[in-house]
Amino acid sequence: MSYQNPRAVIAQLMPRDLAILDDVEAFRLLTTRQVQRLHFRIAPAHHASFGAATKATMRVLSRLQRIGVIGHLERRIGGARRGSQGFIWQLTSTGATVQRTRRGETRRRRYIEPSALFTDHTLAVADLAVTIRELADSGALEILDLETEPACWRGWAGHQSIAETLKPDLHAVTATAEFQDHLFIEADQGTEHLPQILTKCRVYARYHQAGIEQHTRGVFPAVLWVTPTEKRAAALERAIAKDESLPPAIFHVITTSQFVEHLTESEESP
Image (tube, rainbow, N blue to C red; front, side, top):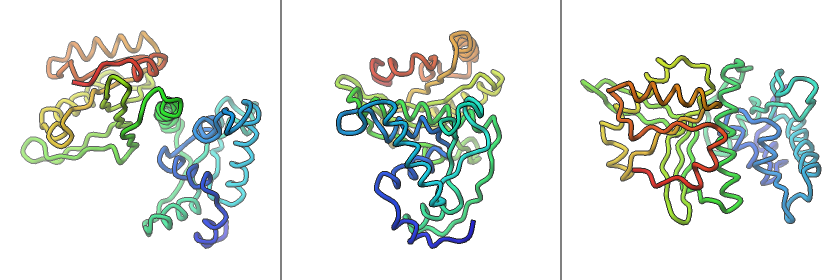
């Protein structure tokens, strides 16, 4: 695609277009359905039916693709039979330039077709964040903070001043009428070996021991592992419990189907 003046492109974009670009950039990848859940809600003031919301979503995404700010991967959710509804969207180089121009930045980023493993994990993380946003839109909770990667990463000087970095998938602070929850969220797809999971848990344990989060924010977030099946959740729980180097109180393991209930009915973080 030939060069486009980013300010001329921005002039073509409506506020909802810009909000969609912000989310595609923040989550790195979003499916058509996830964009619909975020920006094309079924409500009297929005869209009267699921079908109307779907048509509006595709109309806007197709226009943004024609403008050149987003593009979809070759791979689709559900395969080719799902058509455009199965598209997975990311920013194009023009879209990235538009975003940098809006922030006054000059750093360039190259966009490539991500691996299947990266795509699956990124979309799983995005789905958890979309769910949190939906709960906030419905009034079930309030979002006080929601950070994606790399904004949610934490760096500190560890043992012998060796630099360490904790890389959660998400950091969220939510509130209901009764409780406020601080969470580091990990989307487990069941593809990593348990030793890899425990290695990351030990990074959490070291960061907890450093006391930085408690000092700066007053609380250490609960570490919430969200996994697809009860069998996998049980395996993670057993592995964490057996590792004597881990403080078990900060780790919680749930299935994806329990995520909404956990957010809306969970107890206050310690």
